Length: 583
Image 1: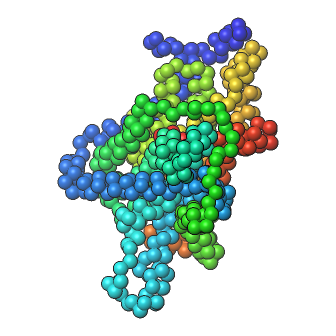
Image 2: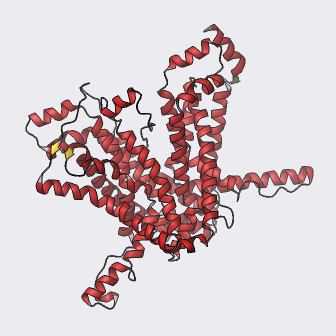
Image 3: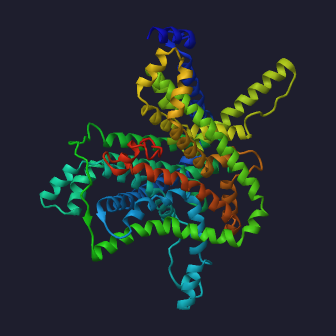
């Protein structure tokens, strides 16, 4: 160990700041955290600046509508995702009925479909001129809209339905993983006491899975707050839509920042509620007895009901909308290619790929810094740098564009005063701004996956490398990287796909006349040209299927002692394992 101590002193060169001594890994992590914090701090600073009394105007006009509509949207999505997610997770895990093995992974498929894409599809088929209402008019002889009643798709209820159909997999994923991890003893005791499937579910399995369910609901609601495409298309007045309205239509940055701060309070309330729900409560396994879970054989009507209960979310959340889009894409592919589709696809691929590479590098740097035994302030800095995933994209976009614009103006003034050179806007209004905004938002995915991958590497590996005189950097390159290649690939895929789907930040941060697949689909669908952009929508959905496959494989390893886990330990399967979701 003497060799390692001398080597670390030679390579790390700690920097003393007051009572703290930071090596280059810790110092780099602190700098990254500071850069990631700039957009959020900018929003808070601008919200406190003078705004021509815009806040008073907003609070007396649209603010109450934003508050009640946002609360209503969250409540509806929360109830819907809980019922579908928990119910299907219990059926797919604990009951035996036809199609169960297919449903176990197929129930995750709607996660690949962005909410705004499914909103465009259902609006196209359910509006007055759509095929559904036209068929009803032909059957019953109706002529005008006042001749009959039909639910309005472009409404708060429609937005709740669309988001529920694509966000319930968050709850399903974590609920099923929780059910798989439960000890068989608890469920056997419930059965010996004469309790059937329903009683065992409500009194034993559901309380034990409560922490995972709450986290799943929190993630779904955070995605609800982040959504812009659906609420904008449906004309639902939420805070995200309000931020865009104040920014673009009223041209008031301070007012948009103030709305963003209010929106952040919803996020803080969600996180606090999740922590409060688990206050002082611990959930431990009471036995190491892990064998096949007791399952309930369903027959007849019950089997049929279970089958359709699992089929309906898949059919309406994935099969129907994706089938319609695929049909449009085949019929109108020539027109799609004539609208610069390949250019927009290239923009999406390059932006998402560049951000994925940078996020993996930064996330790996931070995770390894923590592994090296960083001080408490370093661990706090890494957690703070990962908060971006919990912040709506509209909020981060405002902070990003304002902070980068301030830097550009300051640099231009300095260069003009000192060297009589005008630099113009180097960062804001460029793809650098888009990539930085993506990084701030999705760094948590990369860092969490890297951290989970590194924890699977025993510390004895580090000790062996140290005794051979290798520096921390050499240990990372020669020991850790080959062992966590699956985690690196997983992190890159997750960040890449989320960047492909991201709409709110892209609209605000993109350069002028710079379109990605997400903005291209939103623009054309908003103009009623869904057929022309269907190929782009199908491409986005196809990119999201790969992470769904990874997630499906991951939960197969959730239960200790499972056949999948034994297969992995035998060296026959190297599927990457994702980190546990955290609010």
